[in-house]
Every structure is written in structure tokens, then in C-alpha cells.
Image (cartoon, rainbow, N blue to C red):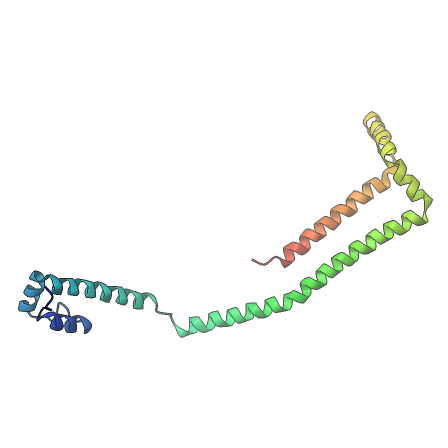
Length: 171
């Protein structure tokens, strides 16, 4: 079994040229059916040939126009992303600036006006009293204006932040 088969070189050449088994003689095919070394060689080489053919068929890139269009689309998307980075930074800056100005205004008014401080300190007690009055009469006291304004502003700020997030969200 250490000596190679005399037909092995011929079988290897036919397989390498892709002519196995169609280009083989009937005598060679009969030999391959009986010789274990030649049979294994033909079987393995045929499997590799089929795998190579399938891989080459699957790797076809497609028409050049489609590849060019995809490259243009990718380049355009990169350019758009590069342009939106400063816009996102400006939006974050505007949001931070708005929040700082709003908090600064509230602090300034609270320090400048005793009416604000008094109102803020009495807010929990007056809220309970107004709630009891509302439950009893069903009417809202006009002094509740700020209790309605603050949640409204907070809701608008929250909705604005959500709108900014949705506008800059990448999909």
C-alpha cells in the first residue's frame, strides 16, 4: 500500500482540469471504482471542485451600476452624518442654555422678590387648602395660576426635548 497507484496521476490530471468523470475512459472509471486510493482522490477532488464552483457562483458582485449606486449612497450618508454633528452640538447647547436661563430667572426672581419666597413657602399648605376647596365647590381659585403655569412649562420643555431627540434620532 506504500506504492502509489499507477492511475493516480492520470485521475489527478483529469480532476484538476475538471474533466472527471466525463473525460475519463471506461477502463479508468472501472479502476477508480475498485481502487481505494483513486476512488478517494476522485471523491475528495470532486467535492472540492463543487465547493469551489458554488463559492465562485455565490461571490458574484453584481452589476457595476448597482455597486456604483451603493458607493454613492454610502458617501452621501457619510456626508450627511458629518453635517449633522455640529447641528446636534448646537441643539444640545441651545437646550443647556435655555435650562440655565430658566433656572437663573427663577433664582433671580426668588432672591429679588419676597412675594415669590413667601408663595413658595406657603405652597404646600395652600395647595392642600385649595384642594379641599376645589373638592367642596368644584371651582378653581385664580391664585392657582402658578400651579398651572409651572407644570405646563415643564410639560412643554419635556415635549420639546422629546421632539429634539426624535428629530436627531438615527435609524
